[in-house]
Amino acid sequence: MPIHLLEKIPPSPEVIKHGIAMARDIADPTPPMLGDTVPAPGEGDRPRPDSDNGIHIATIDEIPQVAQSLAEGFKDDPHFSFMLKNEEKRLSRLGHGILSFIRHDWLAHGVVHTNEQNSGAAVWIEPNEWKTDIFTQARILKSLAGVVTPAEVARLAYVLGSVEGEHKEIERLRRPHRYLAMVGVTTDWQGMGWGEALIRPMLDQCDEEKVPAYLEASTPRNVPLYERLGFKVIKARGYRGAKVPLHFMWREPNS
Image (cartoon, rainbow, N blue to C red; front, side, top):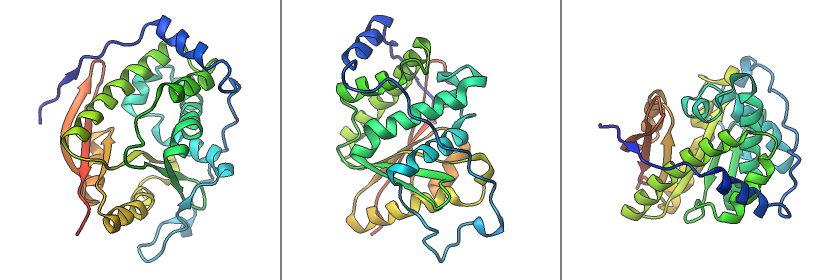
């Protein structure tokens, strides 16, 4: 499958400053604290196929630890490594970025599924709710002021803008769907089956309600997992600066 470059001009510093100024009276610039790292798994912490595995909708109190686990799971992701180039500060900055998106956008438009240990999460956005409006963007920018650098904000806006443009075109050609915005598991808990366990409850709901699902796989090695769950690659593209392509994947509900 060919890889294409997305020609997207990054926003200027003036645009970024304008967005932050718009949010001056909307959100608190002081970032909330992240949660602690989840302890290493024990022998009984592997998910079981005959159990609900304690998967539930995350509470407000669980969100900081969920954000920390997601950040740990994505700290070496090639796309986040491109957006947040400072390796020493990446984990903290990524955690606060994920926490900001959860607080200011994702919780209002979907659900966050986690397990009893908060070692990972699947973030689902409801149909027709995934497009981020300018006020939400302003809140997110404001919450990240002083946490990430202007250059990192510019790269974040560039990548997310490019990906959202592809998403809009896919929805135009297909139809409304549930969007798996992020799924990840903290490092020590990876390879145990928690990714699939976290995704499965909403896929079952999609099947019951006859709703398609959509996601972007950030690395080729994640594609087989999603294919086992019924997703199919419909497009693979990179953006300027990307080391690996994103795989845009679609899942029709099971009959």
